[in-house]
Amino acid sequence: MEKYSSRQLMDIEHRYGAHNYHPLEVVIAKAEGIWVEDPEGKRYIDMLSAYSAVNQGHRHPAIIQALKDQADILTLTSRAFFNDRWPLFARKLSELTGKEMILPMNTGAEAVETAIKTMRKWGYLVKKVEADKAEIIVFCENFHGRTTTIVSFSTDPEGHDFYGPYTPGFTIVPYNDLNAVEKAISKNTVGIMVEPIQGEAGVVVPDEGFLAGLGKIARKHNVLLAMDEIQTGFCRTGKLFAYQHEDVDPDIIIMGKALGGGVFPVSAVAANQDVLGVFKPGTHGSTFGGNPLGCAVAMAAIDVLLKENLAERATEMGGYFMGQLRDLQKKSAKIKLVRGKGLLIGIVLNESAGKARQYTNALKDKGLLCKETHDWIIRFAPPLVITKADIDAAMEKIREVLG
Ligand SMILES: *Cc1c(COP(=O)(O)O)cnc(C)c1O
Image (cartoon, rainbow, N blue to C red; front, side, top):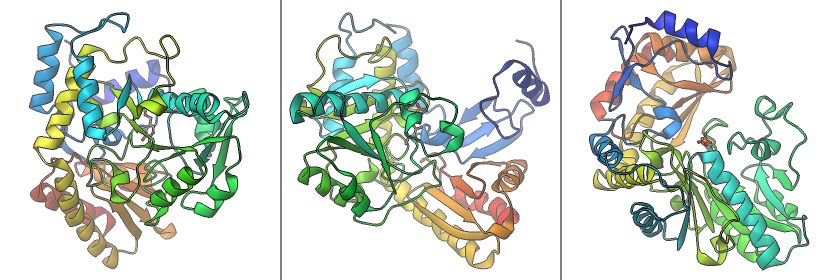
């Protein structure tokens, strides 16, 4: 294969690729663990983890082995037939989530769409809501994906505008506001869909009791609670799922990203029989959903999380990292706030510090990759296999840029 420089590759992408992203000017050509490398051989610590899709670290050997082994045997059957991987993945994910049934898809947005369809169908068939009147409560600053229905209830103009006509049936209320949720409930409400921490909004952590409160409201009014754990799930915040920090049992768990171990898109919805049972043959599906290659990868990805105690690691390393960042905050005029849980950390900048992009750029030049969300928040979300020594090395760079 012909060798291209980073500059050439960025120019080619700019010429031929649609400009629906604004990447930092770094080309990644190789990766292992927490490290990535550009074509010129410069190494960087990855502190984004593909938006938490690489919790297990880049190219985890056990996950890559599962991919290779399965690729040699069977990759795709469609669900027109049974295959010998999907049943075992379904059982594994059911046992892991404590939910009776699993519906497999590929991308996160597809799993969110599945949850929306589930709540609506449950509303009509079980709760007996009048036809086409179902309402789902969602939250300001939400991020649930990019389909036309999902962007219909986005409050971010960039993600939302110019894609109408928009799908009706969603009521948007302020995040972290239980009164607003209670007030928004009507006889047609079928569900509440929430991120346990709003990642894209800038790692917004709700008050303790918010998620448990949602659970109580959902019970009281006979509506389903759907937890979007696509970014927060799979040990990122120090628990297998972020909702487990509170006493709440969501009806629907939406998963994606790290479920594919950073190698393959695998997403899923988990719920009990009385909820996910609304789907009958032919009523929903996906050609690649439940494909043997994805199932083999996802099973290995789950094993890695459990075997390597990555939840405890995220708690321990996240505590250490956040402590260091808070020490820096005390001495820095640039940092307003450090917030997060486990290894999902947001740094809110002071207005006087200017735009976050200049800092993510400066960190990139020093060999640390992270991304801004909005203009004033920097997110740190390294692979969960990061060590204390790695964090110390990263902190040196962060101190130079944000100190
Ligand atoms: C990334 C993300 C999605 C969408 O997942 P895709 O795989 O990009 O479709 C949905 N919800 C949350 C919370 C996410 O972080």
